[in-house]
Length: 118
Image (cartoon, rainbow, N blue to C red; front, side):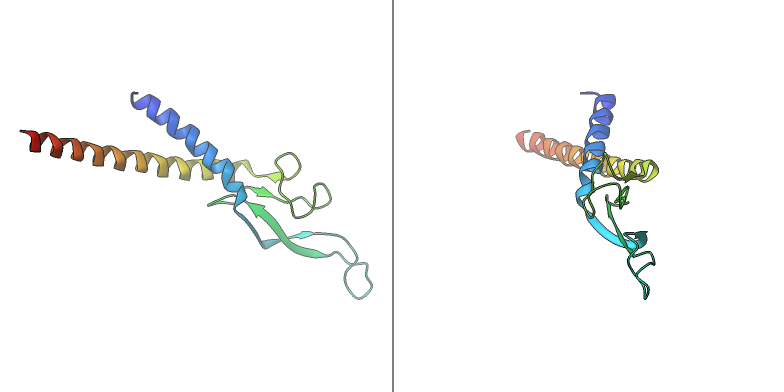
């Protein structure tokens, strides 16, 4: 497989890792309105920290009132494409670095093996 094949494979793997990183969920510090029965008159908006997913950058945010509350879903919640692109880029760099390190270690091992045979 040539360099183009390695880069294509690295991009597919990085995209997959970025999409799977939505399983890394955390809340806040952003606040969203989750109802209107708060405050002394029970008529004020209720704000809670929003659930978000993605690593290292959160790119999927819970959309209260539209989706199942406190559960992330690609079809119903707010997707931030720029953050997803940054996630893919970070994972792409990590995958390329890992491939390069493995390639260098493999080359060093082959050289050492060939030197021992001689």
